[in-house]
Image (cartoon, rainbow, N blue to C red; front, side, top):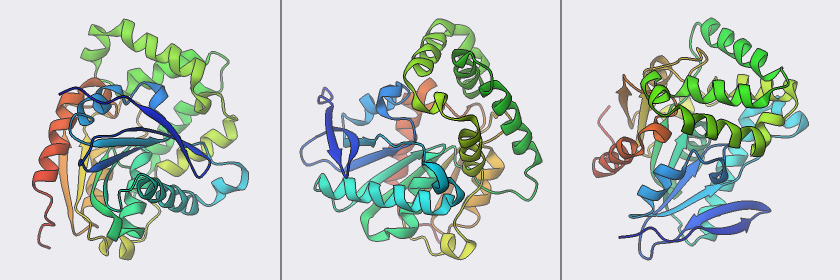
Length: 283
């Protein structure tokens, strides 16, 4: 069974990439990186054989919006639901990856009637001691604040992949870094604005009471490697899992935050397994 072609649509002034499969559930993939960044390709092609797949091409929030990350993620979550409705899917699965995990989680908190399931890969959360993550953000800021954007992009990829994968596939990793440095708006954003966004991603913005009220089945896939020291971490995934009554935590000890790029077969199988067992667990 081959995957359908990718269509480019516009919903509420935002570009949306979608493949349609008649009679199949919709899965919306959320991350600030759009499909054109290349990092979704492996997962996309595998999931599109079973589902209708969509990805919203989100932009870095403008100006004062960054002063209220909660409102930003609420807005992205609302847009995700609007996209699903425009695609004639009143209920859908959402798969949030890294920063996209905030969007997926806010959708679960705000739109329980619209979600069939919620999967979080590399979710961030506020920990009692954030010094390690803050140091990691400082490292990232130093890398971003130099003129060679391809060098930062290469650092970003190498930090999210396992050393063995980088060693065996360095040419591919370098090509992805060049692609990101040339085409990704995120890399070229104002450094102060970018740093504020990265800091916002590394905390969660829903209260314990809101997390406790989530009834959508939530699967949290927590990579064990954090080579850039800024998260996501297993401790962050566990912090969310302990607060969400319907959450199941799966620790990926040998994986980095870009595991969906490195091993899309593994993530596809974990996603499918989570759907087969998506009844909420008992408290």
